[in-house]
Length: 209
Image 1: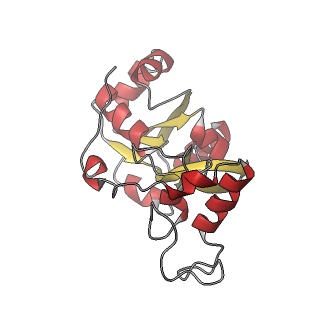
Image 2 (image 1 turned 30 degrees about the vertical axis):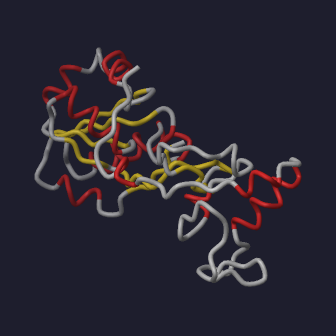
């Protein structure tokens, strides 16, 4: 799930606009409680209290152009009449909305990471979307997101008594070894991996099947 948080200074961006349309997200932002029905309604009311015109709509997945078109089909006139759109969704949704509407769009949220949900309001980064998944080799534990140095071949020389020198937490490679041992796959710990080619994510990526 894409984890987001509300921008603290969002209302500062809309001072020069009088007609505003808000698009919320029915999936990730709803679960994060940053862009669901309640958040859209609250924002609409805040903007109206500023003596401005505001309307809003929840789109199931603003990052999916097909669904965006489907869910906004009855809001074309409101969107066309608006001066700006506030997008309560991730950065991908913001860009998809711009592409579809050709309108100026204000991101109402900050996109943080791809995370696991423990409970509403408590999220952990679990995936960096690096494009080179080695989770099977490491017992389902990602060293890219869990190791401060993003090491791919075991602990660094700074590890002491199983603890990381950077954050004093349990070294993730110690945890990976214990997991592999539970699976009876200690030999996989000895796999030597080439240095990760970060240039793959240093430029815009696409996947066409």
